[in-house]
Length: 521
Image (tube, rainbow, N blue to C red; front, side):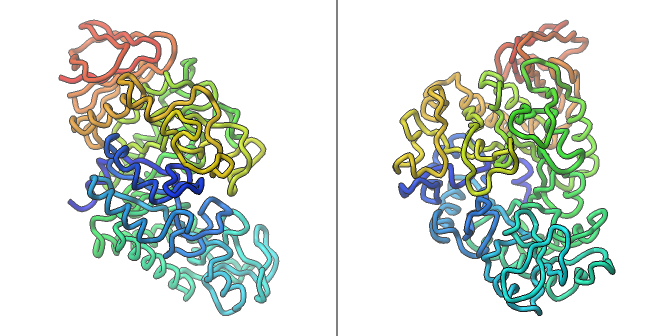
């Protein structure tokens, strides 16, 4: 079977701090994950990926790793993670971890040792002040290069280009870069041995520095992929690159369309669903997006980027389309309401990409504004990632079924909205968004024409959006509040498989506001 399982999977991203608390300390953990496996199996997802769960001081929510081979005590011991991966496997769900490949915490023993030893080259050290570099905290003189926050020193994977003005630059085959490449494989091997099925690689393009065209970065990842194919042929490595057209040919099995990064800094995905809505992120200007009630957006930017990506990948890997993630606002953000979300999920789960559902989006959890800075969540005056990291809403009790701890000990506050959605209520309601998402996942599995490999023929990219999958299924979505019509000049699949508010005759297609449907032959 190899890695074919990943291409056809429905992924589910879990922010472990906020998913389920099994020991009552107010923070999600492996025990909570294991307890909630029944839900994930019922929903129908094939794989989950966890944000970093390694030992960390949590200056950046775990992306500042202090020990790659140990789990953070807040989540449990490594054997607790192994128990979860084993139980998930028996439930038909694979587990992927988040690999922070390009940097560590400044409290990692590697860095502590490097800050005391001028002959240690695991990190990038300058002998003079340089823009962006940070003064040594140890007895070693000099300045180190961070990768994101100052407390995240960049591991030294070498430079693709030398510069006389920066004589400390080392080539990619120097001792430090070679040691780090070897360590990367040791880390991956360790977790593969505990049942992990792969990794999502944080900041995957950041390893080799000053690398025009990512030539040396690509060589590093292609070598890693060759090693995986030889020794771990059923494991996968996904990139946080935001440009599948570039990263998949470089050796990754898949990559994500992102709201930032990659071509035009993520403009294609933001043109699809701009979850920021101009009130959450100051880094990106508000723009009309296609999945919004006013109907002022266009599918063209996303479709053009998807076509470019599919051509560049040439069947070698896959592009994943996420609803949201831990760095960007949820689908239910700003004025967007839950009644608008079914159309978005209908598109996401029937387009020829690999869908990734961010935990809670399947019930319409909203972005919660106004939260305090939590573990590095604030990146600007109006850019606070905490709003998309709030506790999973399992039921309608005051603690949302997340934890038995007092509310003031919760990792983040539960959404205070009196009308907040929850899993229990929606499982009991056959017409809920949760049931709609579950039905779409089952429909995708039952009809290969809705999967990642069947061809797609666009019939209309305005409102409504209409496309054929493999000439077997017709998908129609109208994400605006006003109805939309489309003349029909050919025979189309007309048996309703899923949806509401869409009717089809021999001459016309009508979609109510927020209507969506999948038809089959």
